[in-house]
Length: 507
Picture 1 (cartoon, rainbow, N blue to C red):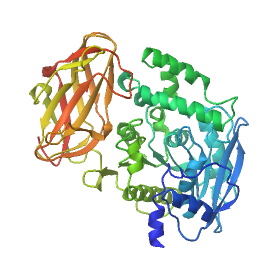
Picture 2: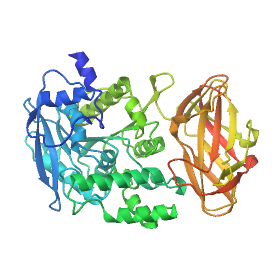
Picture 3: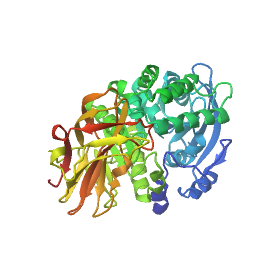
Picture 4: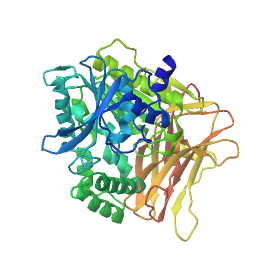
């Protein structure tokens, strides 16, 4: 029994991908268990819950499709509200919903507006999607199987990506939410979609395409996705810059604007290799919530939106989902459970979890001039007619451990404009070309020719550089996930510095 319970914790917000369709009807846990076993998930032997489909009328009459998972034991029970990632539907939530239901929660998993069997138009977790979530909370408050005080149910929220963002936005508006577990979510849609003015065109193309196709295939063909998004996308691709209307639209949907109103304790979960909503977005959510005086935790595991998610091992799934269950038990059920430390970071190199009282616990910041680094070059170029040139700077390591966000203070002269450049850190072992750490890159757009002074926060990382290895900073003018501009720039090495957060080591 204990083995099955431990393996149950491998269910994630993105699990259930082996399940297809959403016409579940009323089904026992054993049937769901079989599907989750096929996707590598396991549940306890009792099968002590059932699931049934429901349709709930939202604030504006829009039909929201959901599936309710109810424990067979006598209630009432605490509740969990969950929805899916962008372009998906509630079928992807079966294993996560079953995980909570198996542990005594009523779970309402629903198709977000415009997706699956729900009506309406997809508006990127805007005011209507928040109001939908509030209407579902109202429904749970009236549901006999749920513990409630009038219109205030005992409720938490869990979900990933699109389903993570809606938690932060809803809980900031509605104080009935008792706890949230936002996974791989964003803090600032403007900053994550176009960092320092450099549009993530690869991700943008994928998301607009996926969102449009999936909403038309699974939702009302006459409604689909917000039509403005296609027009803004075309304008953004034509100019390789984010239109002002998009900036306003995304800013309204950014939790950073509202987190000072959040009262629900938050377990922020994200992945090191996430290039859509990178580690900096999770750290910003955690810090802003913590700074407001609300209890929060940060868990960084070895996955994210990238393909690396498929390689996340069982130990990581177990740790993350044990933390989620304990968080709900403590803040929603009211149980005296242990919770994870303030900060839990998966260390890929040692294949273990490292825990801290703060992101920057026992960290010293060391600054070096780019002109002092080995093999320094300064030309950055991307051209159709000449070989590309990359500015490279290599720092010899002496058992250095880096934890946190490096800072790049950069003086760079653009000879052509606009020009988009990219800074990345690489771990060089011996004669190797170097591994780009966590696949992360920090883009920045040079709008005009001339000298620019930039202060850039690179993505947070956890990395040990043994004796004989090196850390390499690269600045280049092309990246596969961005639209490139042709041109060149020169880094002023003697006026530029790299600051590293050094833990348990020294330069």
